[in-house]
Image 1 (cartoon, rainbow, N blue to C red):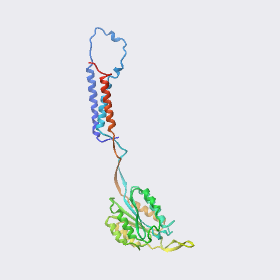
Image 2: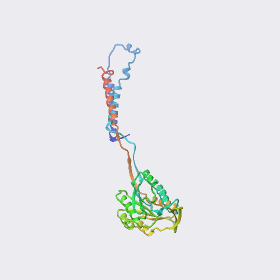
Image 3: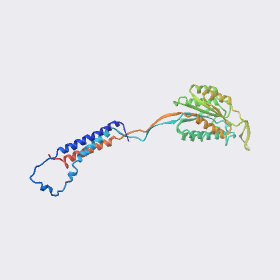
Image 4: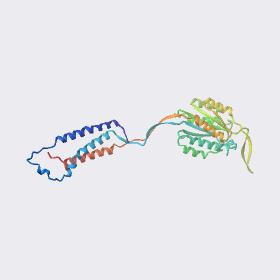
Length: 328
């Protein structure tokens, strides 16, 4: 319980002089009677119940005044009200889902490993707005910026290679992520771009997309996924799945330039542990303190107090004019 006008509660001090005045007035109103003998008054007399209740009307009136002051202070109910500091930024994940992401130098493959680590990263950032962009030969938004991480994580389950035209449109994926985050009002705007290849599709060059990100104050962390040398890649054949070692070709110069232009960093993930460590490092780099004032909707509660005031005054008037009426 809180009060919208708590200063009115100081009026409760007035009850003290009012009570004192009542006692003083009562002492001056005692009648006196001269009699020749007081023997009759020495006999035991039955005390009427009205004698015990003669101060009840005054007590009811004082209670009514006290509750009226409470009504003036406007009591309100609320669940919580607190100021705290939290950590939160806006993050867009741009993930490569091209066919080469099925290579198994990361276990069970690059795509599944990337999904698992990204999901753990999301679970560790409960205060962030996080969205997801997928790209291969084309790009589309799997999930816009949201704090509903349950929905976002459920969408991760549907990610698979082959959802769109194959290829690696790094510039297009980055540009799509920028378009989704550029209007954010967050203090810090971040894109984490993960790919395992070289840009070979799309109408937008990676460096052009990086320039757009820089214009809107978006910091880009780039991650190159893939071991050094060659990686085993599954190929379906009439005789079942056959594996072939395919050269790992990541456009590291472009990824490094993108991160350098936008104030981010480039990372190389050659195995599951390295990829997890990269997300942990990014998690530590991107911590922004935000002052948040949390409060719940307030509900006015003076109605019940006002009805109680009315009831007490009504009872006091009835008693004073009926059962406890004073006869001069």
